[in-house]
Image 1 (cartoon, rainbow, N blue to C red):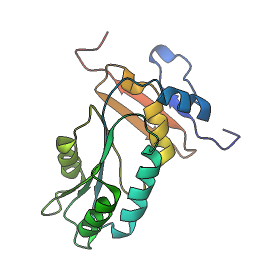
Image 2 (cartoon, rainbow, N blue to C red):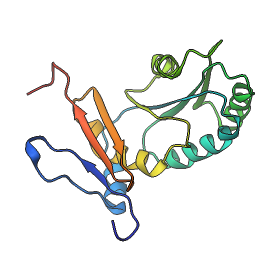
Image 3 (tube, rainbow, N blue to C red):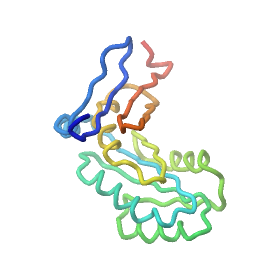
Length: 176
């Protein structure tokens, strides 16, 4: 967008024109979300330098979120002190930040699954820890009314222009 804002562009069935949400629409839609608990899962491996920026960024992104939320950071067997740094920073942040430490490097998919298994939320968002997640994308995703629909998977892609495409994947039980 020419004004420097980033747009969330949900994909619509049947080729209908996608919606683009501006900052005001995002703020408005956050206030009408159905009751739920949000879990954000982020795996990390040997990323000690990203620990503090990640936690600070996620805290800032979710500070005004109107529903209960938790951040689950999974240390995937790091050997550089990432796990200890995560535990120190999580203790400072509060009980809504949880750290899971795997005994060895099981790789990203297993670390992500461990976080999903530990999640308490009705809505689970998974993100990479490197680079530090784009909080604007997270806020727009949560404001997109996607969580109000009966879907099981939401695919989010960010292109080089930082536009975000959101595609709901209907479950077999919910497909029309």
